[in-house]
Length: 255
Ligand SMILES: [Mn+2]
Image 1 (cartoon, protein in one colour):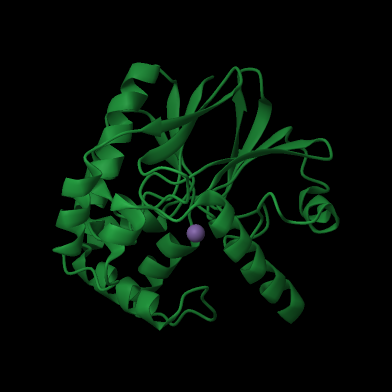
Image 2 (cartoon, helix red, strand yellow):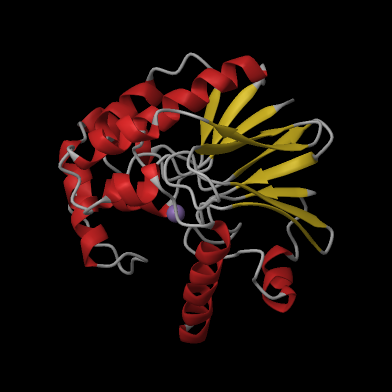
């Protein structure tokens, strides 16, 4: 089969709609969302759109999806990657969700395998096969990456979480990140995703980022200037990877 891999929509409805239009043209067999669909400026209409998709779709649970369900249920989260401003965003977004939307998010799967044309058995997960928070980037040392993928039988592993497109060979495994639909780290604004099968085709969909950023910054989403800093302009890929890798080093040194 051929798959459209969409990750980290983060409640950016305009970006999602732009990608879905291009996905239809790509004529894939299924769409896989690799997590973090709703935490962002338009959580409820984003979930509504995903719940009524006419395309065949599967959903991986991201750390932010997990945290939204926990916040909706008022269950404390043990540890979070987020700082206090993002904790406020989780509470804000969970407060806009219906019980049906909560139940939809709660059914997302930790990971699953599909056989993709040309790529073979392909594992879809959010951060790494064993965690929805662990940070891996092209800067992660092989001595760290290889044990994470040791014992994973799939030829290809597709992850999201760090919002940056990459396509890496790690030992026998091809590790692919399609980037982020709604909150990318990249060298140009837009909505990033990938077509899988028979190879990996990285994609970028254009949309009206000025109008989207304006709507986002008027939405009440409690992260200041989110539209301006993550949609109208975006953090550069190299800079973001260095920042994520530093977070990864700090997390590894604590565990
Ligand atoms: Mn994530």
